[in-house]
Image (cartoon, rainbow, N blue to C red; front, side, top):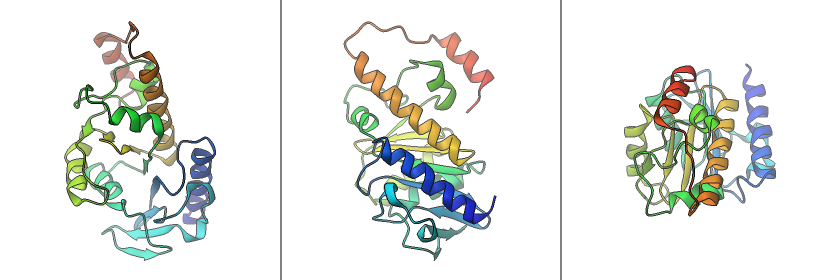
Length: 210
């Protein structure tokens, strides 16, 4: 795929997320692997109106090569790419339901959301909670890096999800599935709920490895 096509795809999918209320203002960021480095949405930009030509280009060392200055959370993306060589794209949102779940005090930090649906298990699997760090704190990058080798999706406490995928579409769709599952989880709190059992989850993991 050409870099021009990759830039257009980032802008198209970013606008789709924005138009459906999964990101807002200048929050959230997307990156995609290209030859020699990564494309990333610029700092202070809105996903609803990205100029493909101004999307940031970073080399494999994380140096800014061209375009506008990259997102200040670029280190989250780089951590995923470096720990997961198969990663083709990373999405980080401040989507409302996922953030709400990340603020709850009674979730399991080793696996925040229960297996409510098969599609959540297929697209996310296990979702660890990363402890809270202020935005831009490099300790956050270290915490994400520690989990990235074993998990392609993590939830930042009081912040939001970071999701890696083999392709840009995979990363976006998995992020959407996480947000819908977080919504279901909040809707079901207080109700007696039937989750998938361990055998059902294991079978899905064998058929659809993350």
